[in-house]
Image 1 (cartoon, one colour):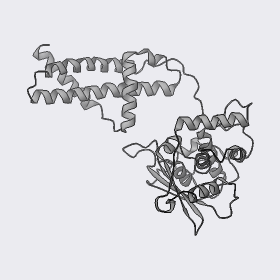
Image 2 (cartoon, helix red, strand yellow; image 1 turned 135 degrees about the vertical axis):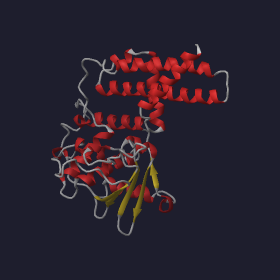
Image 3 (cartoon, one colour; image 1 turned 120 degrees about the horizontal axis):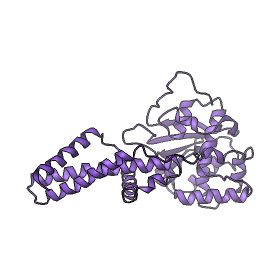
Length: 332
């Protein structure tokens, strides 16, 4: 590659980097995008073969991110090598040229999406058709000696995400006031703070609750652990294993159902139950669910799917929520 072409490649790369804003994402999302993007680079048919819009746009986003990251990394590497008078810097420019060709191809593919996608599979469908007070029936069928009993209890009362259970959820108990505190470290949180609550603490009133309730079960679980008062008790679960356990028990209880209960079903029903109550406004519901916006909770459950009530006293979240765009509360 002659000198004129070398500098033309570098100039083009700098122009691309300047025009595209660097994305601030978590390390996990970066790793996922690089893995998916590399697969798409190797096989472009993965974009056309995407069956759902969600899969297509995720693959496309990962592909574009991977190409953009490659150009930025190679350009920075070339700059370092050139300043250090490393003889390999021209080889890096050749790799940069290939990355730019991939960038041009990615730009051309942006509007070449599949003509038709399969309908989006709503998580709400798992709630439809379940008998009234099904959560009580489900809880009664949970083996209280199982390692998942405390996890199911948390799903029932807090709507915690499976990814948050993988991080670990802390429970503490104030015996004098009979209040159970559940601390959740959020999933789906962006580094720029535009989505999700990094931490939320939900308080539950346990006074007068039935001895077989999920809240009381968690209190007993807490009190049975050594050093609980000093350190709290942490409850964890593998997300995939939890999905398997929850749906397997659902099939056992309701073998004729087409769509079975998943961990997210509890989240939808809790949201519906809070919406049904007069004691919870949109902001409080959003905080319980770990959202950064009051609007997000509108996608979770409807009043008709709500249960009898919730023992939630209060919730504290790290960030102030973004309100609805209009001043009126959205219909539930």
